[in-house]
Length: 186
Image (tube, rainbow, N blue to C red; front, side):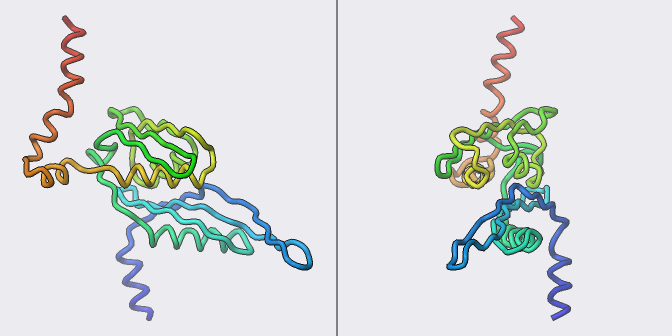
């Protein structure tokens, strides 16, 4: 078993763990209340892979450890543009929470609220503008963000689906901004 564990640690790249939220929860039993803790974690490799997990336990460290393990098991790959931002704008929804994610030019930074910021930092995004609407519940905000990230498609994927070249898909990306800039200079 030691070899299997060693192999797993070698395969796993350096992961960033972010604690998004911790709550005290109560279970009502015959003698009164039993208190426990619920943790919400985001784990990512800062190279385009990220996962989320939430778990409950009697003690805070146990809840965090279980949530981190669940997040590692649920990691998904997100295609990034130049390894720093999204390929296109996208919206996501979970419960009453909605998030709008917009790609941004270099140097913008991460403009996002708490739970969203944790997801983007774990994912490795450097430039993004995000807005959450509807709820401030961290669970719904994180789930809405993952819903939005699951809708992102790389130009390579779109080109293969349409039987076109990647250059045909990407060529229309910056023409609108270039045309606006040319009109402003005249």
